[in-house]
Amino acid sequence: MEDVASINQTGAGIRLPNFCNLGVMSRSLLVTNLFVIAAAFVRAASPEAVLREFLMMAAFCEPILIVSLVALCASRRILHSIGYAASLAVIAGFEILVAWLVSLAGAELLPDQRVMPLAQIVVLTLFVTGSLLAYFDLRARALSPAIAEARIQALQARIRPHFLYNSINAVLSLIRSEPRRAERALEDMADLFRVLMADNRTLTPIAREVELVRQYLAIESIRLGDRLRVTWRIDSMPADALVPPLILQPLVENAVYHGIEPSPDGGEIAIDIGLAKGQLTMTLTNPLPAESRATVGNKMAQANIRERLQLHFDAEARVKYEALDGTYRVSISIPYITAAA
Amino acid sequence: MSGASEVPKVLIADDEAPARSRLRDLLEECRESFPLGLVEEARNGREALAIVNREKVDIVLLDIRMPEMDGMEAARHMAGMQAPPAIIFTTAFDSYAIKAFEVNAIDYLLKPIRVERLLGALNKTRGGAPVSRHALAAAANQPRRHLSVHERGKIHLVPLADVLYLRAELKYVTVRTVEREFLVEESLTALEEEFAPLFVRIHRNCLVARAGIAGFERNAEESESGWAVVIRGTNEKLPVSRRQQAVVKQFR
Image (cartoon, rainbow over all chains, first blue to last red; front, side):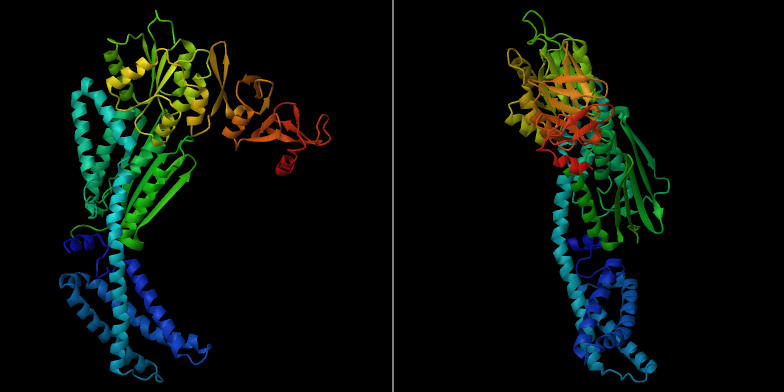
């Protein structure tokens, strides 16, 4: 269970879900409403009455749901601090309270609505809340091997043998003529491979990832010389923003492999990082020479990044790949979170 | 290969300057046991062909992945020469190419290259038969972007995009562009296979570039199907055989 803290920190959520996450919220709404639909079918006397029954019950359930989600999101840190079992008890008690209050309010507003007996409210609330929490727990358990798997995949996709051997070859060529440069290149390679081989489940500050990309590009520029031109636009980058490690480097590697190497004159890679509406946005642009063909490796890196973003941020991360007249652009947008928050 | 009295001239083709300089260093080390002449350098396949056209080169160290024209295509054009240079491929990593080289018994060196391996490969070029066009064609995993015509010891490249049609003659295939005609020593079937999406067969002996079709003409003379293809940019009309008549429908 030592990993729990670190995985929770990434937002993947082991056991107790992150109620502030859009994906968790929409799943809660979906599951609860499915229960309501099922109940409507059970209660309805005729097929025509199903809709009426559904609306009646939804009017009761929806306020409970929304109040609960807001409250759970707000009290997330407290819940995490008291442990899983205690937070289950707190959530159950809280849900019963909310359901009871809403039921009282409903009876007040709708005269023909009878007040549900407390025992019934308790049983139904515990049933729905329990099912939902069990579902999130199971889902987190199902996904956690996927995190390990994704890490392995990440490792395999990252160390492109082409890069490794060409870099070693380039450093070998420097040893006789420019030993100092060879030293620096080997240091950069060591740093790069340290990250590539590290446990990459916890988030890292974007500034560290940018540093890593710079080291990677320094190695590549030995081989490619002035064919490789890079423009950084990161003045408005929040340096403390947390990102999954190796979110940019593989994409930059793709840009070099598909955008720069196939062209005799090379080209420019532009990296933009900034904040927009509370989201951290990263945009990578590179030329797309006619010679460059989409390859399996390329697709692998893309699928890999999409998967890792999904594991970390669920529905709140966005990746877009666009190819438009001679340019290829990858845009990533993830929630802006910091270590302090 | 040149005569025994001459020292062989080497060409290094690689798009990365450090890779070229490392090979140059290694070649210097080889000189003691393997006398070498001048060492030339090219940054891509096209430059390599220009150098081979300009002067006699005996051994080419050819990187596979290069911009403009990759090593595989450059090798295929060189292999058609009267006295082709010995070709040694170099690659850092290319699992496809390596497998293909093994299958077709083509020499290659893995980067970073050891001086012993390089020396071994150089020694093998002595008296060894140059790699055949067929082996290279079999090892290639993508179509060439040019056809090569060999005239007076020089390689002329004809971009595929310029080719209007290919017509089989007795021993050769005629390559027609807007400006002129060339003869290449290849089989029409092999060309059809390699460039499948670009050409369409209109006759047992003729492939027409899809981009070269200006239109079709009915009641054409000397055409068993009655149809002829009008070739763009020329006033030539090529007969469509009865067997390939369905082609007409495809385009009209």
